[in-house]
Length: 241
Image (tube, rainbow, N blue to C red; front, side):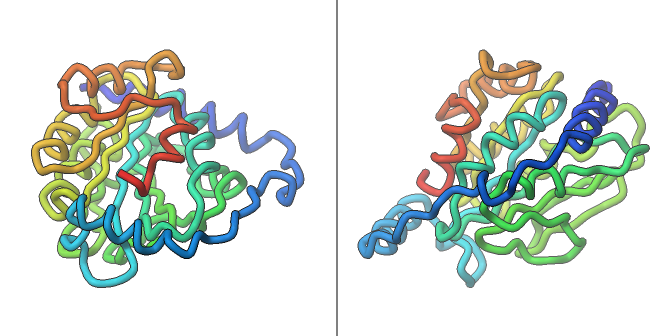
C-alpha cells in the first residue's frame, strides 16, 4: 500500500502548530474526586479483560491508537477525555512524514491531562501516559518494552499500525486495546483482527466523524470491531473495556 498520508499530516501539524496557544489553564479539565469504590471496580474490570497478562506494575491496560490523514483532530478530541488514575498506557501510532520534524507531542500535550512523550527504544510503557511513536520508525511491544526499528521500505505506512497491533495482541492477549482513527488506506485492519482473535478490545472511529474514513471503514468491514464511536466517546471509553 502506498503511504499517501504523510504530506497531508504534515500540513495538519504545521497549521496547528502555528495557531495561537490558548490559555492552558482554561483548557484543562477539572478532575473529579476519586470514588472510593472505583479501585475495586477497576480491579474487577481488569480481571474480566485478563489484565494479569500485563507485566507487574501499575499498568492495567495498553491501548494502541492508529491514525493517518485527519488523525490529528481525532487525537486531540480523544486525549482531552482521558483522565489520570486509570492505569492506562496509550501508544499512538500515527503515520508521519519522514522529511518533516513532527510536532505531534507538543500539539497533544496542549490538550491532554496525561503526560505526552515520544517513545524511546527499549523503554517500558508507563501508566497514565501517552507515548507517541517517532517519525520514520516502526514500533512493536516485546517482552514488556516498546521497541523501535528504522522504517526504510519506501511506499509503506510509517509507522505501521498493523505491526504494533499484532505485537500487542501477541504479548497482551485480552489486555490489548486497538483503536483505529481517521486515515486513508487499510493499515490497522490486520492488527485489529489479531487483537480481536486474542480477546482484546477493538474500537473504530465513527466514519461520519472522520476527515478520511478509509482506515476505520476497513477495520469495521472485518467484523472484528466491538465499538464504533466518535473520538471524544472513545476517550471516555478507554480504560473501562
